[in-house]
Length: 245
Image 1 (tube, rainbow, N blue to C red):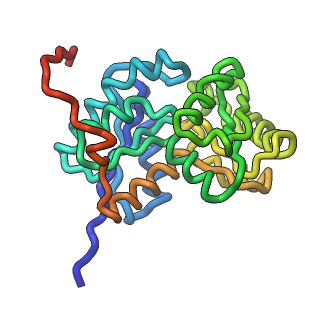
Image 2: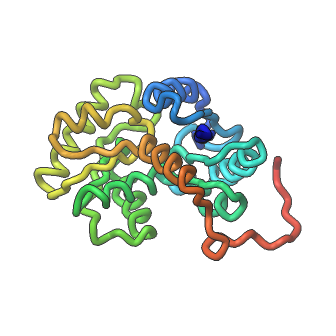
Image 3: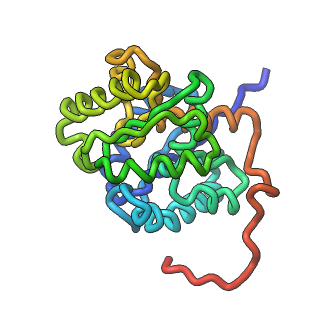
C-alpha cells in the first residue's frame, strides 16, 4: 500500500516579529506531530503587529509575495497566521495551492459546532468594535454572529504577562457566553495560540484557536486535493507592475 504524502505547510506570520516563528513552530510540531510538515516564517517588511486596517494593508503585499514563493518552493498549502487574513484573496489569485486564513478558518469551524459565536479579541475595545465585525460581514455569516469583545491588551503585550492575559481573555469569554448568549467562542488573535483548551475549561464552552483551526483546514484541503477555483479567484491580468522588492 502506497504511503500517503505528508502535507508540507508554510505558516506565514504577517509581522516583523520573527522571534515568534520558533515558538509557533515548536507548538505546532507538538500539536500535529508527524501528520504535517510545518515551517513558520515572518515577513521582511510590514508592521510589528496587526491591529488596524492600516497594519493589514501594509502587511498584505509581502504576504502575497511569500505565498507565491511558497508554491515555487514546493509547499502544498499556506496558512496566513493572523485573524484578519491579510492578502488572502490576492494570494489565492496567484497560486494553485490552498491558502487558508486563520480568522476565516476559525469562524467557519465555529459554524459547525454552534448556532451563535462570539469573537474575543485581546485588543482595545475601539479596535474590536469595527474590525472583526467587518470580517464577519464579508464572510456572510452575520446571522450567527453574537458579539465581539476586547480585553484591552495590545498584541505585543500578550506574552509579557500570559497569566494576566489569560485571565482578561477568560473574563470576556465568560461574559460572551453568559451575557451575549454565545455557544462558541472564537479567539480573535493568533497571538493567543495554545490558550484555547485552558479557556474552554474555564467557561465550559467550545473555544476555537484560529491558528490550529487554519492548520486543520489546510490538512483537510490537501487531503482532498482542493485548490482555489479560478472562477472565484481568476489569475490577475498581465500588465506592467512595479514592486519595491
